[in-house]
Length: 528
Image (cartoon, rainbow, N blue to C red; front, side, top):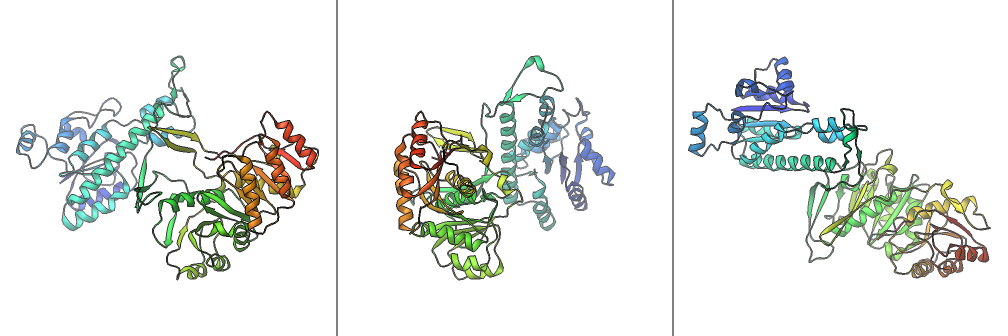
């Protein structure tokens, strides 16, 4: 058996080569990899000795040769192939270990030049990978260090790789080539090329959205069904999911997550991550129905649940702090589909042990979790895709423009910032009443902002929550004064809205007439 090793990332390669050599596998290698193995006392044959042709063009041409690709592509069960190898003095290659030039890492560096990007486009590596992967019945193709252990386990146990493993390695290899080519396409089609600036130091300007959009995902699991039982579905994650994102979570107990569970869980998790103090978010049908901050998880949950106990039934609950026994005991009294937190105490886990259907998700949060969000958002439309930068705008007190005679109090300003965070995660049209770090009424997803305001008031009344002296956040401007009148009639004394309507002055005059404070944020938060 012969193995050809040519890796850019040399993590673990010496140990792998030593194990292969111990099994009697002949080692062939290139350039820096060959030098490294030789320095470790391993007998290694340079590719140039195999091909009879020296590496040239600064290493750009070394493996692009019939004695390499013939050894990889020849079918061992085809006599004509084997006769051709013998006639031309070509030996078979049974194991190929390759990882590619670090193109993705290179272009991710600030100030990456076009020359550096181009130089890190691998040619020989992908060509060999494709050859070996195509001939998977006879050749094992290893493209990642995470595969080393499985390969060595089978070689040590059986002296060869099983068909199952070789096929899995082939699939992984073609997936890697697809990812690699997609990254190159995304980069090059984003470059605003300026020939007059071309030099080795040329750092091109790049469009935010590339001319061709190639995105790669890895399947996490097949789902029982989609949004409805007659639809089929699966859950995929990014190739490299961000720390603290839903896709990094671990399910500790409970039934398999459903399509709707995952969609609602993401809404709850992204919302609760936006708070830097202890918070709880309860979501139903992708909308926050209760959000609160508190001194501890129990207080935050109790306040959030109080907003809308009816909608909270069968909801998704998220905490941005570990769940302790007290919070777990309170949550366990309601019907909950999914409960998420950075961690659970042993006592909290014990509380839910008997509730086997409750899905517990542990999602580790990095210290900067408030800043870890998706950079892009996508939405499928007929035969196409809408792509936009994510709505990651954070409102600060300094951003607020007070437009009324009455000035907000410090307490109202703090509640306005809280309400504005919540409104960003409520489907449009969104109206959110808040007081003391607690949602008091949420109106969501209505065609009329006026109706959203009325619904928020109705929900507060149903929950027996007073709206007196509350603040209100509206995700977009009030087109007329009627929406403002509804929230003021309900008890609001301070309102935040983006502004920007042709009737802004009419609404400002109405606020002054009603004796309430109003601030403009200058930013809207439509969420369709």
